[in-house]
Length: 405
Ligand code: HEC
Ligand code: HEC
Image 1 (cartoon, helix red, strand yellow):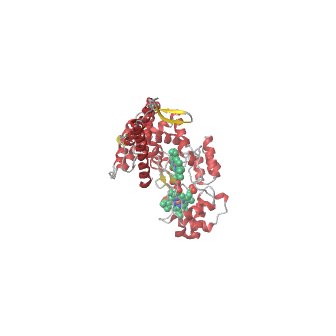
Image 2 (cartoon, helix red, strand yellow):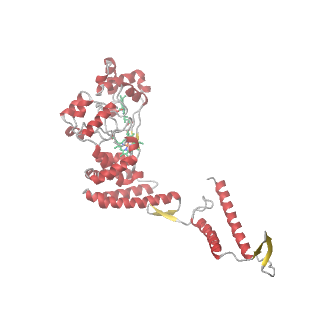
Image 3 (cartoon, rainbow, N blue to C red):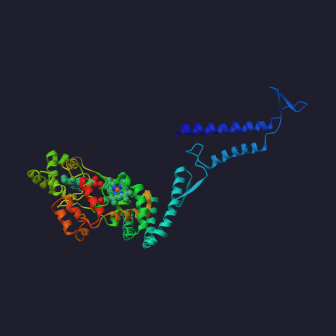
């Protein structure tokens, strides 16, 4: 509300209050001159008027409302909201702050979270044999509070927080084995994540499938935790200005030749060769997608050699990606959900991914995870081989769906 309207309303309310209090005062004080028979002499339609006092209960309620009105204005920011904050306070983040509806909401959320945190620590963590996480969570909470409160945080504070988050890794792995934790995790997923990743977590174009074992940012619990805490922004620049439409088409042809899609298309060999040269120029695609096009989790750059696509693996979509660039945004959840819920979500997501299926190029994770069939899938072609690498039906469906995309 503008200052004008709030002042106008304040003055108007105050004037009303004065008027009503004045009327009451006048009515109580006023003594009419009475006739001998005790009436005031007013007659209306045959009814004569006496001078009787107002009923007590009525006066009590009336005066009570007047006092209530004044007290309300003193305790809450009602008159001239910008200048009078009111005496009422609430506790937010351990500090006593003036009452506002926003502060009250935050305070309520905090006490709710307190209840959640307690049952998380006492029931879920203990049952999942992960009670060791409590100490780390406390230290994490302290660091986060420092960050929240300081206007000028030390440069390495965020790094310390990230390191603490990564220390939760083994506990998330334990939670991912615990049916109770997964049940809560799946509810949280439906409430917060399903809008983008789908209720089955299988994603949609631009929103990654979380049930395959193909990761943009890595699929270890600590990678998932970092993704959830801080959010991610995919950064793939537009290339048309630099490469021209011909260059875009050439390099798209080369990308097709790398992927499991190649058999669906008649590839233009000259373009593939031309595209390969562009791809491998040191400041071009190799920078993020790596010399073999297998992606890089530190850059969030997808593997281009499998047949799992974030935006789509048909010729036109690849050209579109290259012409205009892409920047998928995964929001941060730290400030919205807090550390405990993020642990449960990370455990749930970790439990969904099929660790036996073809793994992404994360150098450490690759060797042990890949079976001969999986290698064949990456090396030459087609989704069916890739799906065959997994024994789990859910994962087979996931891969098939990704291939369909
Ligand atoms: C507004 C849409 C949106 C919401 C809501 C959302 N995400 Fe995401 N998420 C994305 C996008 C887009 C990406 C891919 C980012 C990129 O392209 O770099 C992503 C990436 C991820 C990744 C990384 C996948 C990988 O391959 O490394 C994980 C894990 C993830 N999200 C989990 C979640 C969870 C859990 C939630 C719920 C708390 C959630 N997301 C809510 C849009 C969303
Ligand atoms: C600065 C790092 C970087 C460079 C350089 C780069 N990319 Fe990317 N690329 C990415 C990232 C990150 C994504 C994912 C974007 C997102 O998550 O929204 C991506 C996505 C893609 C996709 C979409 C894949 C899918 O699954 O839909 C293709 C295709 C692609 N890049 C090809 C290329 C080619 C070809 C070049 C060279 C001309 C190139 N990229 C250069 C980082 C890079």
